[in-house]
Image (cartoon, rainbow, N blue to C red):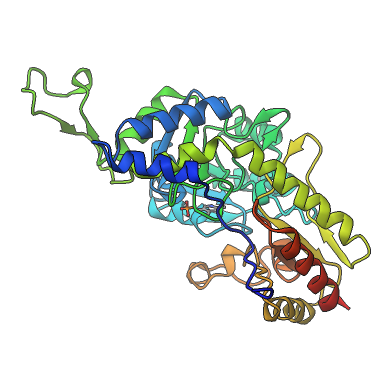
Amino acid sequence: MSNSFIPYGRQDIDDKDIESVVKVLKSSFLTQGPMVEKFEEEVSNKVNSAYSLAFNSATSALHVACLALGLKAGDNLWTTPITFVASANCGIYCGAKIDFVDIDPKTGLICTKELTKKLELAKTKNKLPKIVIPVHLAGTSCEMEEIYKLSKKYGFAIIEDASHAIGGSYKNSPVGNCDYSDITVFSLHPVKIITSGEGGIATTNNKSLDEKMKYLRSHGITKEKENFHKKNEGQWYYEQQVLGYNYRMSDIHAALGSSQLTRLSLFIQTRKKIIEDYKNDTEKLPITFLEVPKGVESAYHLAIIRLDNRDDIFHRKIFDCLRSNNIGVQLHYTPVHLQPYYRNLGFTQGDFPEAESYSKNAISLPIYPSLSKKDYERVIDQLKYCLS
Ligand SMILES: *Cc1c(COP(=O)(O)O)cnc(C)c1O
């Protein structure tokens, strides 16, 4: 097995995780029961948020977050082109118009200067966004304080897409505490920092947003008497007041998430060590790692390098060379605006030059807590070989 495929990321499941899930399987609640509530409370404690809600995916959480913030047909939602498609699709689900803000090439994150320029222009055209979704690519927080100031000046809401960033921090506070946003969303997909199988979390400090998201997560139904439109109904009664979905997390998934959460800081320490090793062991190679700005502790979800050679044929060659040697490199991401679906909406090559040039020389190297020393060395050897 010396040449087995090394993926760019994978989950880390131990016996305690398995025990935790089995315990739920033997209990009375399989779907939303005591484990979901327990897990939500643990996440709130971990990231210092007043509220936290578990969903069956981050995509569902993003959708509901947009709805809770009142996003509707004709509204504008902005995000970055260097993200997973879900960060933009959530706006489309609500009938909103999507636009993008180009990235800072050093960090790969939404560029605050570009955002400022674009907002100024949008103001003159009366096309300001209702929501902006900064994405903490690779686990590194965006410049949230600056984006927050802009939100006050131009009147938009902020959803942090922190799918990569649970366990990371910004200015000494945990990502997810919503100091500079309305809602933060984490993903618990197996390739992310911690997993629940499939799953997502939305955190907020706003009681009304928490309530709205709770209803939207479960068909728009309320079971709380004091909120009923009709009073004095029987014990059987519940009310659907808005159109919601079935986006709930099950207790089975929450049990895994809760158990994984206990190892969050361990996972991040291990990831950080791998990145540091990569940087030391590739010092002489013609590659550059994405920067983590001062004041930010990344969750190190991805080990993204950019090839110093900016030629896209070279990029393809290095990528193919590594893959053919079973190094599971990946590209995070193809710019969303160049996906066929978004091209059909009118986006085209040249719209966001920094994002496009990034996608022509970025490569994600394998990084996950159980990456063995031997596999790590194979990555380094193959990288040296392919680049020579
Ligand atoms: C993974 C991911 C999502 C979607 O997460 P799911 O839990 O799979 O729905 C959204 N945004 C980003 C940036 C992601 O990486």
